[in-house]
Image (cartoon, rainbow, N blue to C red):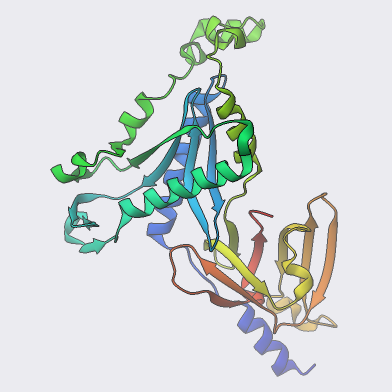
Length: 319
């Protein structure tokens, strides 16, 4: 391979995709809430499932968090918006803070209702007649303290629209002894508090137990990590190398492309893909640079085609 061709390959491989600030902020908010839920719901009768993808006839509906209580199921949507939020007919409008413009988020509330119906329909199909489907409730949670609501939002009667502290206050409180001196001693000597005693926890309904088993089987988003730090959530449509898009076989792919000038003098230049199957075994492939992946990013109307050389990792979220 001629030197000019090698230089062209390495130059193309250096293309970077930097994280988008609004997407990164939303992802950070979800991670923060997941951490808070882990702290509060550990050793409780509640369970939570992050990033649930619910299959329906034509698509998969993504739910930020599904929380099961001993009696019912909460469909939780997180928004890290700031500014002022009002309703115009069926549309939710955000007036962003500091005069950064107006965003029409469409029929957001209707979309949440569709997600709730999809979840109930899935549970009805999967649980069958062995147990009834639990009651469900929608909770729309705003994580940013710099948010104000129009009165019309509080008139919505089939869901709760709350700030993050209000949402957390409806959940079990974190164990009080965890940060105390006495709590340290009890953990050190293995003495559990009464609050951690499983015999004292409320008993979940049979329908909740059945729903928990089904929710644990559902996957989450596929993830595409691009060179430069951008991570995109969505669905992998296909990969031009057919063996690599077998999601029932593989759980993740790592792609290594020669991006350094020191690779100029390697005998061959290829993409190296390490595919980890669902049993943990690694499989290695050597590919040409013309391989593509089509990825339907969340919230986008159509899939986008990426060159596999621009990707560093792929995670299959569901089977």
